Image (cartoon, rainbow, N blue to C red; front, side, top):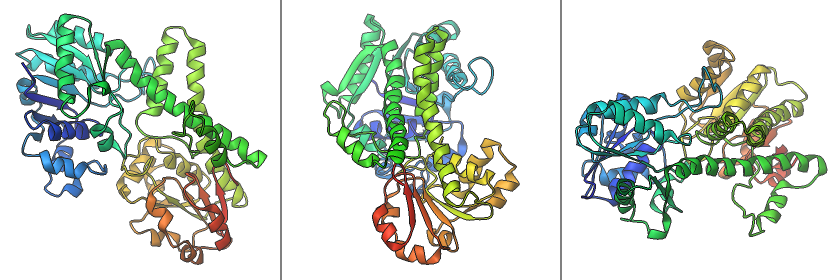
Length: 464
């Protein structure tokens, strides 16, 4: 029997867009996304599609097409679990902040809570799909919980990790490079996997739908993010070498990226990677390696994080050094707060750490981001617990109009590669700033040579 009702627990950056696309492409399946956060669900149900809790290009159109037809957002978790044939678990798996594995291991408390709730509510057989990023062999723990605390029903567990890039999530879902389905090599496991692959087959060709065993699928997600982050840290390490040798990191990246064995993607020097996945997944990989006594493996991957942290500090330090070794009382504008363009996600954004460094030097920081509200900026800084909430409010100004930011500023630092920054009237901006006026391009998206011709003192990653 094919799947008729899907429940997804978790209405965040993965669950919301993924289920919206499944509902859009499979109008014959009812898809219900549930979450205990009433405000988040209310935002998903808001008539104004511009008020969705997540900004992704194209998401509003997908939700608008499917919502109310076969896509529903609800806080009635038990009801959705009971009615579902297939349940996706898409809750947060943050890095542990306590106990064994603190700072590295994934905190699976939300996963376990989901499993226990499913076990308590379910009265019919269910297919459970791991959508959250999880340590390898988490499915084994899920199975033990479900089978030992359930109501005598059968549960089949599949691993279906997401490979979305924020900012292009809808395109990544609708035209995926690959969908990975991990399953047990049993008759039931194979049958369950076919039901999931049949869903994706509504819009993806068979060669893009890969099946593996559960453990390979779980580890593949961590590995994919580790490899991508490794490339970012590699080019950032070279950016520092380029600066001291007067090489141009963009030219180096173009040269090596033309090699078909290497390719051009993720070779753009920057202030560092951010987001919800890369750092968390690499630290998880490091912790797994350490638990198996593979210290050299752990050290290798941990260096990717060390390099990324160094790049963020180096960028902030360069701002201070260039502004005559003091930024005390100086107005510095940060363009962008999201960790990348076309998203309102700020998790692990380099801008947070650049701002924190500058604030520790008593700078006056002004922030503009087209999609990130002021309350999120302050919450990110407060979370660091470097200074009090009142201090952050007094030292940081968040503006909704970029023109407000530039007047009488000493320097501008581009921290997110929003396209709109390229189109600014930089002649007018220069006129509004105190002289000498500085631009620090942490994402290498601006025409530095042109800005120098205007009169700016310019510095970009890998090229002074």
